[in-house]
Length: 131
Length: 131
DNA sequence: TTTCCTGCAAAAGGTTTGCATGAGC
DNA sequence: GCTCATGCAAACCTTTTGCAGGAAA
Image 1: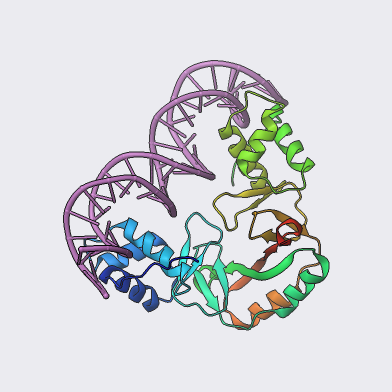
Image 2: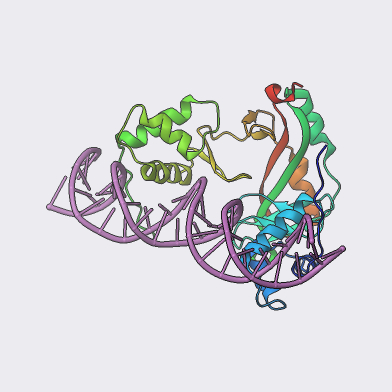
């Protein structure tokens, strides 16, 4: 039996979540830090990391542990795909329903127990595709 | 006009590539380092990193810049998907033909210029799915 | 008043880089 | 001989962690 820890609602936690919900980009931890610091100038990067971790463990936000140096965070936990610009690194949501054929196909050809899939489409965003 | 650099064929470069081609796993840089060091005991980690970078820039191998702390390298540059075990981190190739519906769909719903896609299926490998 | 959080700073872990020396062509 | 590559170590960057003081319930 695992003793559940209580989660206190602190100012820092609240502001981090609000800022993350407010943006449509998928900020990195230090971008969140910069946003939050405008409202709470004394907050530390460590606190931002700890809270992003805790919020994603609890399914409140999503940690995008994808390619690139830094992880990105998404305040919106619906099931959706991402599209990433190879030139500027921008990441956008694409709200289409999941391709069920993907997992069906893999179930048929692999001896893994399939749990899910991640799809990232790569390209050039509207800005970067211009000559 | 960009002046091309010449690439010399060194013992280190050769052995790194051979070891990478020899394995069916998708080793991390330090795993490659351990493998190569059995044949070239004086090689440094820096050299391994520099060569893996150079080989992947030249399309000889593939850098898997996916989720997880460390990057993995794949000696086999065919177009294929990967399946990853959520328990032990193992990565296997899945040799099926690409889902063309993916890029078609994204082309239709997004204003990005689509260049490619990456699909990673997640699950439990044969070993880890056992009770 | 107990438990959980925070700020700060240091440590960790993976990767990159500067530099002098050494190997390929 | 000129270029490029290597070994070594230090630097770098992102993320994690230890700790003492501070806030939430």
